[in-house]
Length: 317
Image 1 (cartoon, helix red, strand yellow):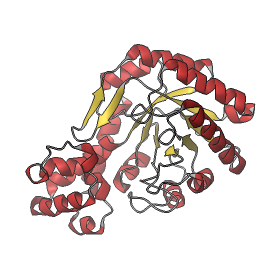
Image 2 (cartoon, one colour):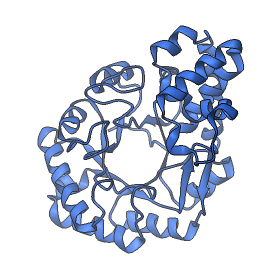
Image 3 (cartoon, helix red, strand yellow):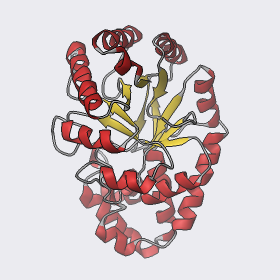
């Protein structure tokens, strides 16, 4: 495991973002989702699991984000993905909760997943639990989860659980480029306390669009780490919007055809009247699209500077 304590895990939304992070001297890791990077490819730079790991080349830890059943493009059981993750990544987030709403069923699947991964790589570290948008956990349920895992897993395997996902009542709205919900510091602090009771680090998801003070408040409560993803992709998208000129219409059409924006807008959203907003919502999904590459301005250095400025902001929290 990496010697540095990683405070921020960043979604590798593009090659520019990956390059900026590995060039920056900070405590950052990567959290590729299965849709971004998987054994059979993904929308980020067409990277497969092994190719992404080779590109990062040990310069930052890589954690599979939301690994498991139903988390990829196809509705699979997740085991083929886990097999490749166990060969190339440092940590795996075992997250069956999109598929299992009943607590005991999700816990049983979590144990099966962890045992399978451990059988392929006994040194693999894990994250357990999930974010509020997938399944809301209260403090009692989270404690029950950790107690169940402690009972059902061998001590050596349970020790390999590095992080537990904690929830504070917030989520994301890409359509508004904002953090949503109502932040509950008491709930967060209680969950952090439970993590420490079982010797686990706490990690919150959906850390996008927060102020320096909002990050600091969480860390002052004892939070160990936080995930940030779409905000970085949108920072790059804004750079393209500033530089594209007449090609913005083409960028809009590529984004519109991708349909990636649909889940983030209401029924009253009219794409033709909100072209820039539509691009902001889903522009990062098409960075590897061949049509986009034909119109992409040569501004990689500008983008990396914007990303590094954001990393400085995070480092000061």
